[in-house]
Image (cartoon, rainbow, N blue to C red; front, side):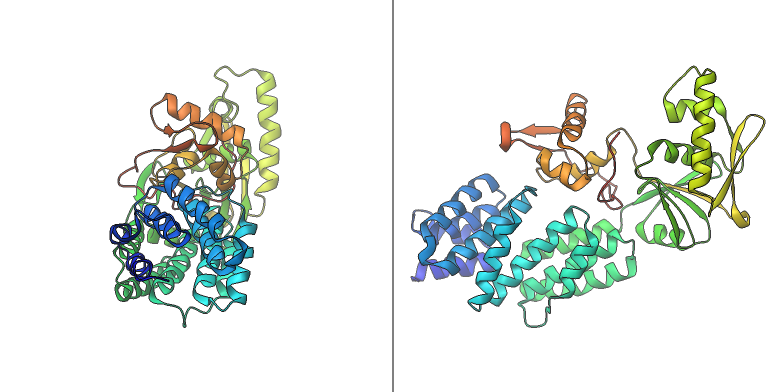
Amino acid sequence: MDSLITAAAHALAAGDPLGALNRVALRDDAPALALRGIAMAQLGEFERAKVLVRNAVRSFGARAPVARARCIVAEAEIAFASRDLGWPIGSLDAARAILEAQGDKVNAAHARYLDIRRLLLIGRLDSAERKLAAIDPAPLPFALKTVHELVIAGIAVRRVQTKTARTALERAQRTARQANIPALAAEVASAFDFLNLPAARLVSTGNERLLLLEEVETVLQSDALIVDACRHIVRKAGTTVSLARRPVLFTLARALAEAWPGDVSRDTLIARAFRMQHADETHRARLRVEMGRLRKEIDALADVTSTTQGFELAPHHSCKVIVLARPVEEKHAEVLALLADGEMWSSSSLALALGASQRTVQRALDTLATAGKAHSFGRGRSRRWTMPPMPGFATSLLLPGSLPID
């Protein structure tokens, strides 16, 4: 490898993409194409980066399996950074196997972390945790140690374990400082900022207030009956009932919880659950059926009793009732929560992250675009969606991996 390629590689490792481009910008050999692609990715030019790295893969060919595998890992990183979550993960696994067989432990570990971070993006926390446990970060360079701690923090945040997340971020801050890569240090700082933004809204006995993630954790550990509108579950003291696939039942449960200790009239419940402004006997009959189903679902946590006007929630052991909701709620909030990270998402990646059909997500995006809340760039398969980050709220903090979209 010549001196310019070596110098460009060192510049990229130090987080200096412009310095790398200054050395290889006019070259079209395979190593230069790969380095140019990585540099363009560090500058945020993902589409150009994909083309360059893909050309490098072809140029290296089968005669240079290790270099080709490294380029595939770089291509995967660019794809995931640009939220192309449908990128063929099998190619990354094959490249990782080659790197491990050839003794390139650092790049093989980098490939593993890419796979884990993708799982984190689509909400598969158990799988991400299992794969992370198989990696020993001790012999790895400081940059990958930082990534390891960021993944630990990401899993902890989504499990609402703030002490674990904060401790991991403190370790990440130290290793990022030792790595001396500004972009990595900025990512750690951004993760710290995320912990200090409102993560949810508490509604109880007619009052509302915003909560930080640490306060959400305290609420979840209390003895209160919690109707969690972030994950569409009802929980109390370790017992959890998921209503994520029962939207009507969850709407009824939330309406009763928000009115506690009072009751909710039948007309109000019909309007909220069935979206009917004028109720007749068929709607009241359907309400009785749905209330019977709700009563059965949450029987271990609370009773649903009828009153003269409607229905009321009666938690066991006379505990307090709390509703946890997102800081900002509106139609298609799940899509907005992902778009608010400022990255460019494809509709297929949004569908994968939300566990919804691509057509459902596309309808939501069209609605948001009409309202001026989302913007698209490109056409066809290269079309990407984004929105400016919503200031002051950790919008995607409590977003589950798979929920239906209204």
